[in-house]
Amino acid sequence: MSQTHVTDTPLAEKYLVERPLGSGACATVYFAQDTRLQRPVALKKLNLPQGLSSQEYQLMVGRFYQEARTAAQLQHPAIVQVLDIFEAAQNHYIAMEYIDGQTLADWFQQPAHRLDDALRVMAQIAAGLAHAHQQQVVHRDIKPENILVNTFNQPKVTDFGVAKIMAHEQQQTLQGSLLGTLGYMSPEQLYDSKQADARSDIYSFGAMMYHLFTGSLPFEADSIGKAIAQVFGGQLILPHQHNPKLPPALSAVIAQALCREPADRYPSMQALQADLDKLHDLLTQPMLQQSLPDLCDPARVLPSLPREQRFADYGLLTLLQERIDQNASCCLAVHGTQTQQGLIAIASGKVQAAVLKHKPDLSPIDALSEMVCWASGYCLISSEILTQQPDFEYMPTDLLIMELYDARQAYQQIVPDYLPLLQHKVSLKTSLLSRSLEHQPHVRPLLQQADGDKTLAQLLSLLPLDRLSILRALVQLEAQQAVEYLPA
Image (cartoon, rainbow, N blue to C red):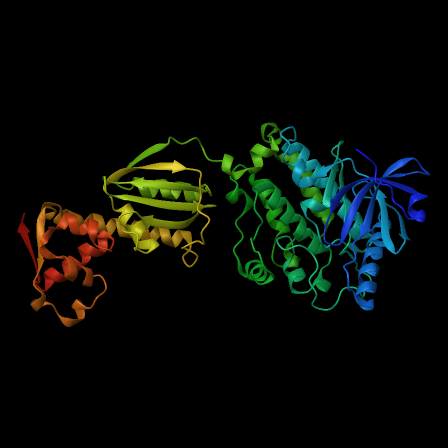
């Protein structure tokens, strides 16, 4: 690779830039050689947008150099060391220890790394942050991308760009400002970054562990408003519920770090580190030796299922509940008779959508009620999931399952009376209907279709209602002697 020589003299006299390592909105990092000490370094160059006002310029440069001065206070094996700061030709630089390795997120993807390795790495990160807290420094942006792991599995915390010194809040942080990364920020940090203290780093550390060990953030959000709503009001799915392969003891450590109230979290990063160390004694060797990619991928938790799984009686409900309890993400292509076909999409253990091929206009709940009433059938199970917005955001999963069980039970009680009438044609005597019954939503479709030419079986398949609602409507019509069944 050809070298890129820095042309301004002060920089060229000391550092020889060889290649870029990465770039973000605020800075670009280069691999360089310190020509005086003959060692590799990482050079971080501040990216200044065009058109900055004098105040904005001073704010950005001041925060950049504050990052260096803050990190320079910290001398710990788990923290990237700052070597130098300088300005050259109106460009601003930080020279740092070069780490030959990868981000923590990439490190977790290596099959050679085991849970035992991960616990040691996480404990070392906690030790580094504990040292920072002892020096009154709060990082405020703990996430996998800000942790590097070298070839000796030694982690290094980097990027103190939004850190603060607890003894005195820097002027660069304004009241009510938001500093950090959505998904990892504590409730108090989301509310006001000036309120973040060491316990906020503990929350972010827990969020980072949750993400690494489950593949998902504790609370998914793509905007500040949604993040605040989720973090302050959402229900945390425990890590071992999201990923059943995780040992509950590890899940408990992560969950305590993620407590909504700072006082309920670990009192210090040292206490969190101590619990991580204890896991080596609590967990079995087979668990400690599990490969991280296998352990941390919830999709690999599912047992091998036959492509086709038959059901009868409560079989579909049992199958559905199993997928929910396993926090599965999959699609169930449900087949009853030849004309009875439906789809149930499940994402992370929650029903995402439900639709019937022959009754596409049914609401998701009515579609599910219809499917669980089918006498028998089978499911084709696939790992594909839908990307549309969930249809069941308003109903907790446990209440949904209870409603489906109730629907199935009610259907089982009422359907025996109608099985002998399936091949009978249904005719309504509209003159006998009361006005209140005539205008009920589940009766109107019967008035339009039950003209004496269609059998009950045909009506159950054609009407834009679930079959339990149709049979309940017939019961009401029979009470007014407004329905007649004619042999076909």
